Image 1 (cartoon, rainbow, N blue to C red):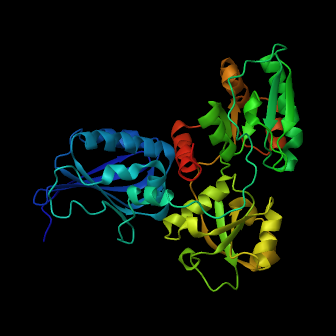
Image 2 (image 1 turned 30 degrees about the vertical axis):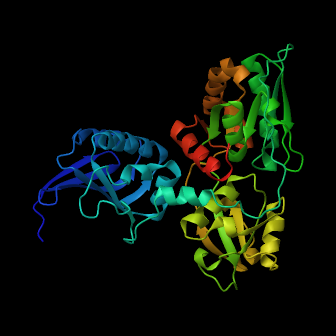
Image 3 (image 1 turned 45 degrees about the vertical axis):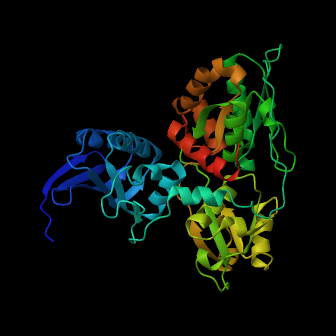
Length: 414
């Protein structure tokens, strides 16, 4: 059947939108291409507030990347159309965009509309780039309620609930740091000296060690792993202040080079080794397994406490798969790399280490942000950044934090 269509092109910033109308099918198709980021707001603003047809098809075949700010713009558009009773369908999402949709609950916009008896209205209204329907959010929610995976429990830093705490009478603030690497140590002490001057109060620094967990919620200031940050935000109402630019936690899922399985789907019921369950490497690893059809609740998990031991356990045959921080996997020795095969790797860009402030110190947030964001402007600040191995600091994005918390709550709870 030939399409009877009117076609228009909207091109603004990093996203291009080609729209077409098929009166016979009563459909309004939007072909998106490029990147969907914060500039997408300008492109979406050109679209009609009320679609010209009751069925809107969004085709993501030529979308390379969607970041959290772009998702926020898209969510506003879909929310307004959903409220009008428009039937929405997403097609040709690449794997990473599809996963981000599921992580953020975007799938809810693409269900069949109430009272819609159009043929095919009740099918899963999200399809992947391969044309196969993607699993809908309800299915994933059901899976998350299955039995928890069999694993060896480890102590979780800051796991106890805390009563509201008033700032100490002596004006002293405590500052706990979860290092990204031992080479950062000098940089943190230099930064602490600067923060004491800017906040005009003494600050006592402590280094949080994985094998010696401390009560992070008792601290005034915390540089936390993504996992710790979620706990502090959800349970203790800590305030996100800043995060290192372009430094996210991603997972590499690895098997031995001589393994019989070559895709994630080949490892049903397999044993998995990783550092700790209290990490986003573990959570992202589980998420990727579930999204690829491998039920993460049926895997056997072993926690080693450090990545070197985890890699050795995999290579020696004590486990079938390894969940490992991606940047560390790519820095493994040639011998270790040759003994392993990379099965999959995330590119979510949502799990950052984060500087958080206890709610009783909320008045210090503005000064802290101003100090951290201003580091590149002075020689001393540039020295501190170099010692920390951080390009610069940026303010955490609300939508990225929401994505982080959704993933955390899916597998951990609270």
